[in-house]
Length: 71
Image (cartoon, rainbow, N blue to C red; front, side, top):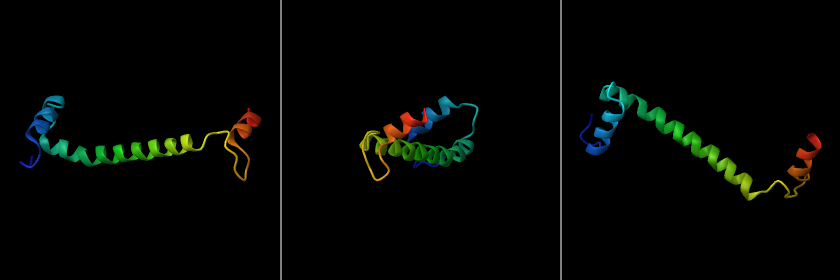
């Protein structure tokens, strides 16, 4: 593993997954980063819903009334 990786971080990773070689951990890093990025996109979408409450009217009406009619 590169010496540019924080020594404490590298040690923690080795303790958490002692069965893995450093190369396997490095292979996992991009997938973990992309998964985190996707989680942040989903969180941002939920935040957008909070900024526009269900009862807020637009050209289609309001989502609260549509939801009530559908149930």
